[in-house]
Structure formats: C-alpha cells, structure tokens
Image (cartoon, rainbow, N blue to C red):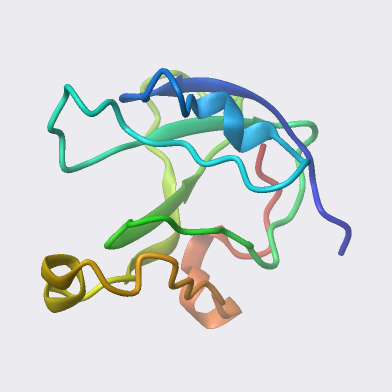
Length: 126
C-alpha cells in the first residue's frame, strides 16, 4: 500500500512557535511538532486531513518524548458531532521511569494488527 500524503493540519491543541504542527507535513528530514513550553499541558492532540480517503494498513510515526499515543480516525463527510473511532488504542512509548530519567525519548512502537483495529479496519479514512 502506498503512503498517503497529509494535506493539511485541521487543528491542534498547542504548538511551540519554533516547532509548529505544520512540521508534520514536512517530507524533508525530521521536523518535530512540539507543544508550547509556556502551556504546561500534558496532553497534545492534532487533527490531520489526508489527501484522499484511504484504508490505513500501517502507520509510521517518529517520536520525541511522547509517553503515550492513541490514534483515532474519521471521515470529513461525517457530521461534526460524530465521534472518531479508535484505530490504534493507547500505546506506551515511554515508561514512567523513562520519563523521569529522560531516557528512550525516540522510541517508536507502532504496528497495529488488523485484529487490534476493531471497527476501523478495512474502511476508508481521511
């Protein structure tokens, strides 16, 4: 399955002016998206629009200090109040000890299996 391009950032919860959410669109090298250092939120979220509705068979995500990650999917044709479906349930990328010791900040563990994707498997998402 060919990679699907992200068209644009629909919304985000926070961003560092030096590392904005639009960096997620970059195909040239590693461009991180970080939360604003003045907003001590422990949870960040971003909503991305794909270039076309596509099935999602795998996801390749780089990590820079994220402890947990959950991926939800939806369609732009859905009503605004319809909740997203979970594609990848919350996965742990850093343990509490890793976080306290500032270790394993770049660990990546994303390999959803079809059995783990539940209702979202085999559908088109954008």
